[in-house]
Amino acid sequence: MAGRPREFDRALALAKARDAFWTRGYEGVSMADLVAALGIASARIYAAFGSKEQLFREAVELYETGEGAFAVHALAASLNVRDAVARMLEEAVLLYTRSGQPQGCMVVTAATNTSADNAGIADWLAQHRRARTQAVIERLRAAQLAGELKEEADVQALGDYYAALLHGLSVQARDGIPAERLLALIQPAMAPLALEMKN
Image 1 (cartoon, rainbow, N blue to C red):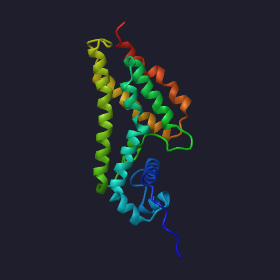
Image 2: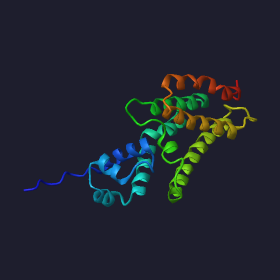
Image 3: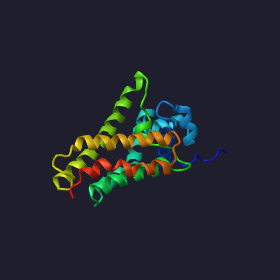
Image 4: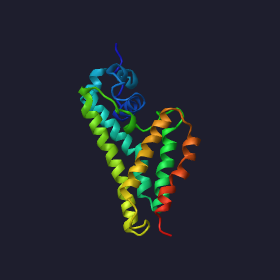
């Protein structure tokens, strides 16, 4: 007599899919890879998530509301703007270089280059990255309005700079640059913002 099928844990399956996509990217993960990673048949994956693309989108949302939410929390913290941006960068390094875990930022690395068939995925992730950049700019603008930054400070240029650095940290982490080196670059990287702070 056959045993009963194992109870399906959707949340656990989604977390496993997130890690697979985070590690190898959208196109680097086949349905066979998902079957192996999740430990369930492809039919159950389709029944639970609809498609590989829908599963990927849910996995990204899981990342952004979990590990990837560090930037949102840092920028919203009750800190001066310099400390908030520094915390965002520090927490990025700690996340992106965790031992035994996927390296880098899932939103940065999961689909930077795709086939024409998957251009929609690449565009969707680009929108997420642009939203992160805008969040940094808005935090700097709020600091300027609050009198923390000089009136003439170019908050858009500063925001673009720190967003580029944030995304660059992901690439460096994927390339194996250790956390101590990445953490060491944060202090000099704060110099442009320090120059725009009011005394």
